[in-house]
Image 1 (cartoon, each protein chain N blue to C red):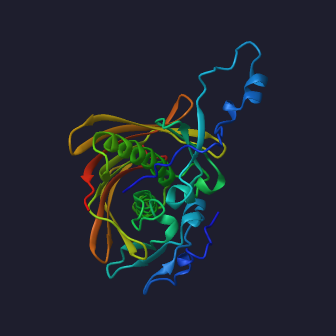
Image 2 (cartoon, rainbow over the protein chains, first blue to last red):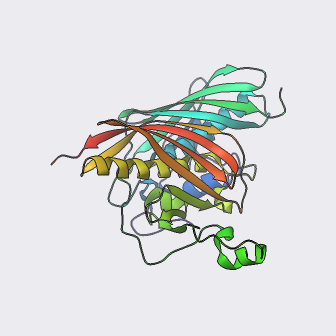
Amino acid sequence: MRHTTEEDVSFLHPAPPGFVAFSEIADPLVSHVGPMYQRLDDTGERIGAFFVTARHLDQTGGSVLHEGMLLLAADLFLGLTAFGASQGRRCVTLGLNASRLGVARLGDLVEIRPRIDGVAPSIIQASARISTHAGIIMNISSHWKILGAS
Amino acid sequence: MAPESHPPSDVIVTGAPASNPALRARKSSSVAPSSAEPRFEPFQATGFAACTGPILRQYPRGDRFRLAIADHHLNSAGRFHGGMAMTLQKVAFDQVAFETALGMSPGSMVELVTINCDFVGPADAGDCIEARAVVTRATRSILFLTGQIAHGNRQILTASAIYKIAEVTG
C-alpha cells in the first residue's frame, strides 16, 4: 500500500545528487516505505539516504519524522555493511541501540553512514550516524550474528 | 512527538485469528472461550504507523498493540523485518509514554532519548504478533519503559526506552 494522495507525491523525488536508487536486494518492507538511495563516499564506504515524505511522519498535523523510519533504514544499511564485513555470509540483527539527538522534518534528506567497529569470529559490531542538513539526529550501535559461524 | 490520542471508534476489530469466536469454537469444544479476551481496534490512521500497519490497539487504551505480519513486513530472506519489529515496539512505547506524561501533566509531550532492542526470535508472514510497553519508572522529567514483542508465548523482541517529558508552552 502506497499513499499516493495529492498531499504525498514526494516519494517521487529524483535521487539526490550522487546517489542511486537502492535496488541491491529485494526487501519488501524497504520497497514499501522507500525509495531508499545509496552512494559510496571517497573512501568506498556506503552512505544510505531517503527523503522524509508525509507517510514517514509520526502523525497527521506534525512535520517530524517517526523514528521508526530511522531504525528501519539503519537496520537496512547496517545489515548491508555487516554482510560486507562477513565476506558475504548472511547476518542477523542481535541488538540495536539508538540515541536520539534531533529531528528530521518533512522534505529533509536523511543520510545514514554505517561503519564496522569490530569483527569477531561470529559477531560483528557496527554503528551508524544519521544526519540531515542540520546535523546529526541519531547515533546507533548494533551487534550482528554471522549465521553459520561459531 | 505527539502520538495520536483519539476517542475509540465504534468499530471493533479483532486482530488475531485466535480471537475470532468462530475459530475458537472450532478449535476446542471442551474449553469455553474466555470472556476476558481483549478487543482491539485500528490505531493511527495516518503517518508512519498507518503506512507500515495496520496496527491494532487493545480497547480501550490498553498496553497491547497487534500486527498481523503481511508480505510487506518481510525482509529479503522472507522473514519478519527487524526494522518493522522496532517500529511496532516504538509505536507502543510512544503511546504509553505520551499517555503517562499526559496523566502527570496535562499538555505535556514526550521525546525519545534512547531505545534499545534485542532480537530474541524470528517471526513469519501470517503470525499475529503483539507488542507491549510498560512504564517502569517515572520522574518529573524522565520516563523509563520496558517492552516486548511476542507471538503467543514465543518472544520475538525485548526492548527498553527512555523518554524526556517536555512541557508545551504557548
